[in-house]
Length: 227
Image (tube, rainbow, N blue to C red; front, side, top):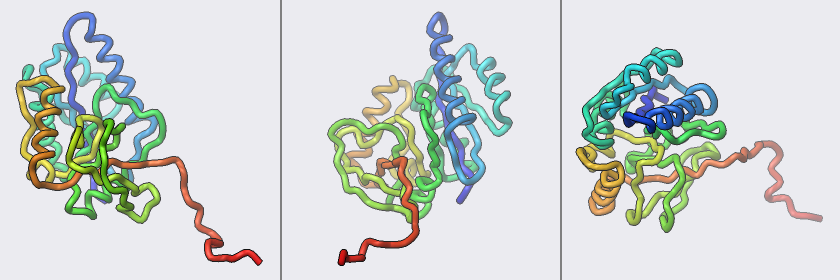
């Protein structure tokens, strides 16, 4: 297993909405760092901001939680520009990046180790979606690792197969599909990139299917016939 970087894109609008967005970010960050996110190796942080006036305050707050963090900032070029800048920096540490969206919190323990292993072991997969699916997605259920948590749905390329919800990304995904669209809304960025993924050849996307159950290996009775 290798170290990875957790990429977080941020924008805190000025005015009365700044505090609401800041509060959401702090809840989400705390749920990852202090509570529920687990990984078997080192994990670093990179925050890519899109021109927030309060960014220095955010950096000061994050530094209380961790020293393993780097930053980039551009001025209002959209989430696509933040993703591109952040991924470029994150790939200096590792070919695998966890994209944690700044207003999505974890609500229970989540070990991403099996899903990182999936990307390391399966060169035909470039992205593992970790968040909720979109409606009408289809695909093939496969077991990608020996771990019982390694089950996933290899998505067909239609609908919103790609999405800017939490995901793990291997550099080969960006190498194949290119950088994210810039100077557009988050919704347009997602739509345009998904359209590119669905209409071009490249690594597949797997929707992770984690579950709270663990099989206890002991006496195997599966082949025992009743008297």
